[in-house]
Image 1 (tube, helix red, strand yellow):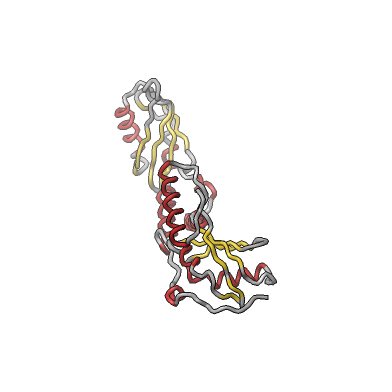
Image 2: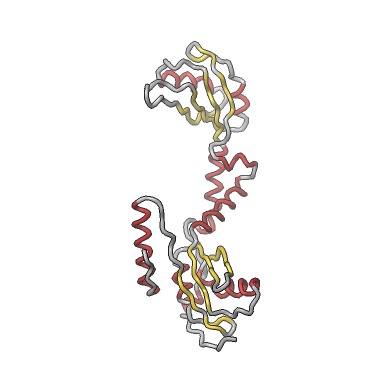
Length: 254
């Protein structure tokens, strides 16, 4: 059993409506446009041309040949990093419905005195090979990014006699005004709540000492995981940790 306590939360916090960072509600639309763009790019592999050709001559010859299929978006011609000679294959990027089938019909065409081999290549983004629609892919990517960028809090002091499902629902309702909740985990000695959105964690920490079903909650921000990335990533980590210590009074050991 827990002794009742007075709810000391700032009224302004209760009025807060959870906001999303990045592009807000347009985030999925932005990601869908991203997938739509790459889906519209048809990748065609070309081999068999003479590697003695000048890059500009090869580019113009391929552009002239494949523009009969529709729009030539780009031609990726690569050189050998050691010899500087043309590599034996290149990629032609086309845009438009049905252009891929038309391009395959150019197999065996003459380019600079050699017959080329034309093949269809998989999409540039591996996700597009799953067969899922771009709106489904966008929603899945956004969900993944939100979880990856979520920040968490540790919660104790709640009624431990509650079932996990009841406690999850209670915590979700209690912290819903702080921001978008991505996950709630109930462990043996504490619960973890993760948020997506700028400032969500700071608002959640201010709910420490508030009442939940007659119990006084103790809320602490979880430390940011130590990065293994670049110097800039480590610098950003130290800055965020120092800011966290200043705001919450909780010193995170580097």
